[in-house]
Length: 335
Image 1 (cartoon, rainbow, N blue to C red):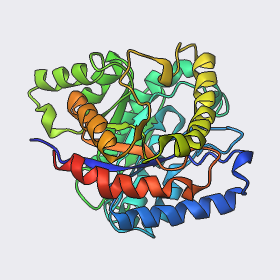
Image 2: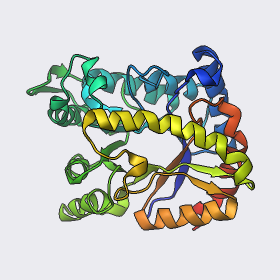
Image 3: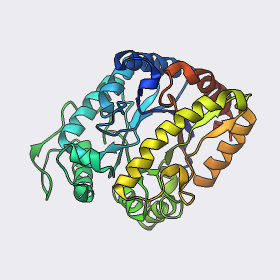
Image 4: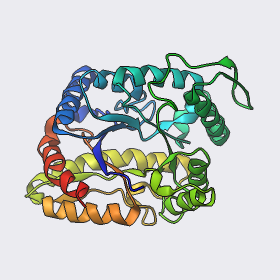
């Protein structure tokens, strides 16, 4: 079954000194912006996660989502991604159950392995454990989401006589998404019956995931594919784009260093093989043309743009966001 397209924004809450405001003010302005965006009609509000970053990169998205849920009515909240090896999965399942009830069934969970050594070191963990911790956590989460009582004994985690309370509002708990930068990640997403967050080449992520679902008798079109694909809508690129570009360079400096520390090669904006997550910039016609082609080519069902480039105040791109939601999104959904 073909899935309806959903459009939204993503936050990382990075607040470098160049923003010129303290974190409390910054958070407050983002909460105001999220309420405004919900009123405009965004479908999705997503969050990214990293830890121990000097500019305050968001380490904990669930409390923020709960605060936003109190001020919004329609937008769904999720993570792209929660670094699953850093979580105690039972506690994560409980936190999500609370958020599920607070938000009125407006929460998903997007998870991945993580890769930044500093993220793991701060928790006293080795990056070498990320696969086993992720797989065991996914096993535990799926049992938690089932609502049934269970016990679990694994290499990394143990649980005895667990049933998650409060109950999730709907049977099955929050929809689960798994990030994939390789075939192994794509197979993991299929194995755990998850929607996909592709972060690599189409052939080794989306295609492998679709093939694995089909091989198991499942229809890939019953699932969703989500991605961060930023869009800046302007009728005067020469006037408006330089400030956003400068902020984007701040963003990518972090990822360039993180990829170097992790020995992962070229950062996302320089990797020509992976599905492009670089900005689309231009007037409405240009943005519609570029994004519609991107969505069709990759089978995207959920697309979000950065709401606050690092170093800028949350309202700096509101004019673009409003046009993205009101003028670009409806035409993409009509395709």
